[in-house]
Image 1 (cartoon, helix red, strand yellow):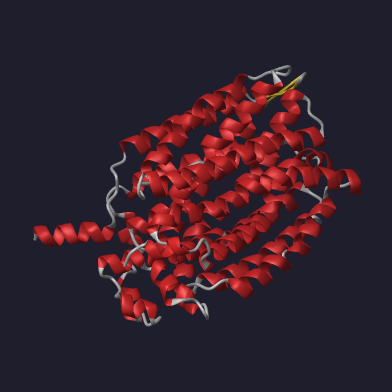
Image 2 (tube, rainbow, N blue to C red):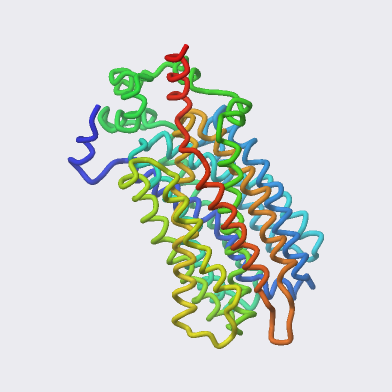
Length: 452
């Protein structure tokens, strides 16, 4: 099996699969990004404090995180497409609910339910991509999902601030978003399949490209792949227990390092809009435009980082992740010490560069589990690493930041909040730098058998 076939044409159906999943995930990410934009009027409307706002974000992520591991197990067992269809329905209902809360306690309860139900979105999307894309394109495919949460924040502030201005309230935004949920539901129903061989009319050559790593290693034969005749016994043979995943050498250190990127991402999503408003005195419209620069840098970073991981580093994921962690540190520290009146150019460059480095590692991170274990247990392995990342990093970082933001006469001081995130990035860089380049489980088993 060679890769020459892919060079004959620019188009493969799997590229459309990645695009559809990106669009669907972007729609589902709208409400979370909107929360940061509507935070100021919502806090006032619900008589909510910064700490209570942070509590709500923490509760959502505290339940969302552990559910990732559960969803990974369910996805590997019942199929990613089914889980995704359920996810979209659950998301639409939870988003509609947000438009109708009237107290802090309602906010807390809604966040808990949202965290449980909407943990069903990311892991099955990633699982579909690792099955459709071989290792040489896998980070770039996984980066398509990251574009959803990077691109969505780049345009959501503009849309949301315009709607608040036009409608006079933050509430109708979430009713409108809930209705838009019909779009991703129909897209998944029409175009997405768990495995390439399930798509009618797909050429044998394209199907074999998706399985080229397994064909090269002898897991499957070219003939059975092209005929769509892969036995369930061979698929089942690649599945392993959660216990074996957790005890695989080096995996726990990788899980802890992953906490950092989720902490950084959610600190940015939750606090950058408020940081810009309260530190520099921006109004809603100006704040929305400035927020976009962070995420515009993130799109470029994710695209370049995933491409380098696949092509320059030949599927090695560690180098790009390390560059991401080290590169973001100085810009987080600049956030900490910027004051009102800072040069617009300095602020623009810092927001863009921080977005670039903070997001350049997503493709590498999400491709890694399938390559350490296999595509058949990717959902389970990714669910575990995401459970660590969300429960500790994503849930904890915004909560800690909410305690480190100090109200002042001029607005608010975010100095210690951003120093805290920079410190986490330093710890993450050390963990990644000292982690061994993990071999695949199949390679390790082969080595052990040879020694025996």
